Length: 471
View (cartoon, rainbow, N blue to C red):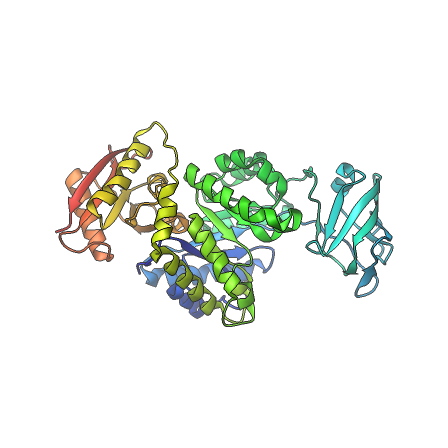
């Protein structure tokens, strides 16, 4: 099942899309990787979803990736005496450690770390920024605030603290249990929420090792301040624009998105643009024109993947949302201006054989009108370096590792195929040509470029570029 596009589609599974038949429909519509949001759902529910994905994968003739999205430490207020209370602008409102139900004057905030770092003049946001409070006085167990933007407050609403780095681990006890469960089931990517600094990735890496790729979700302004170090430590990034847009002025989010996509491409790390992309399709069969333009902008920027959240998890039109995203991507990639934008940005190359060969691949694709670029890879590194060049030819990645093939489902322009290692140059050429022909990438007499490492089967030895003609 060959995709006729380069950018990938990530879809979130949920109550609207969990059974095998619906998963199969989503794959046929264009999904490359499925996200499991562990902020919702039980372990048995997620287990059934992974089983459905693997059953569909067995008949799809393409690897399907699975992303475990950890909840992370969520700050929330406590109980409220009534269904809702109303906070009035200009009034005083306290957040404290008292577990008694709150009212219009106070509510519990069961997070002592917040009291320790907030100072007068700093702000708190409640319910995705719908309520805004300014700290007047901070004590060890109470915050006295002034209501800047009022409105209704109900129990367990989320709290955002945009002005500080909170002394919190990015992993809770729930995250650790969810992670162990997901790794046991063989998830391909793990997304870390609430990342504030590079050490948050190090903590997760210790637990995951090489069993899955690590994705850092950019939700906090502090993460943007440490972007270079986070990109270096992570295997991929997600621009989680919903949470990021709560703690940052909305007008800053588009430029941050472009910066993250550009720097991830420079580093050769996959990047996903996420949140509210086709939000109106949760309840409507068509998106707004602004939403279509939003998806298109991410593709023009060169993102590896775009993501659907509630649209496929709880929406009324999950398959239609995927088809719409597929059509938008395809239309953008047909635009000559898209290729001009990709070619205008030339990432710097490292002084190594792999980058020298990838640079040669890109030029060969232009000169020879290559039907495909074939990479032989163990870890996926060679394929990611080839994808970094954003070549005109699609990338056919041959790997003996099923885990690597599934992880590459996220990478721009890469179609992975599993098979045994080759042992000689002629076998390498023959298998590359045959696979390209079988999977619909190259007709007889077409040219392909082959990228591999010698000795064969040894990771990190990319040192060979071969041009071949398909028989």
